Image (tube, rainbow, N blue to C red):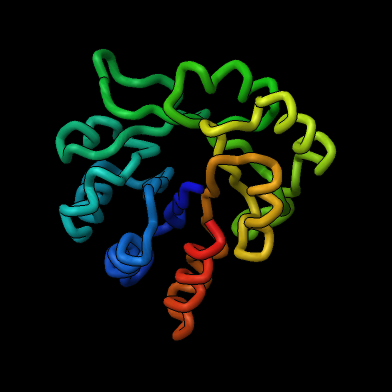
Length: 195
């Protein structure tokens, strides 16, 4: 299974150092999502991340930086819903219904389906799918190697995500709340063993 982490929407002290740690622990892709950040702030964060990880970074905003820094790709969402003309890198997108997954996944490298569980980072953002619906979507091959589970993902529920045939997980709140925990290396290693 693929392990993706989405950044906190706010810039955090020591964030680039922690990003380096995530990649060193086996992170497959990092999605940088800072909805209110100006272009220059994005650049400053990128410059603090070791260049060896650039090919594994995806942007949710300021798509022009993807080619400038030779990043992995871009992620389309409600705010930034169109890829730049002649863009040739990886394109992913956010989906919030099974129907959106059916519509979007053939034209994208992968898609996020959310929220699978109650969100950790967004208060009041509850799971949108029943286990029965997710099992049925797996049986019908709607959930397959191009669909990533997002929303409330923790080490505790990764086994369920695997059972529903998602190709990976995208973690946000569970990772960033542990950033300064002395046991974070053990936890990240535990996540890697579950995938």
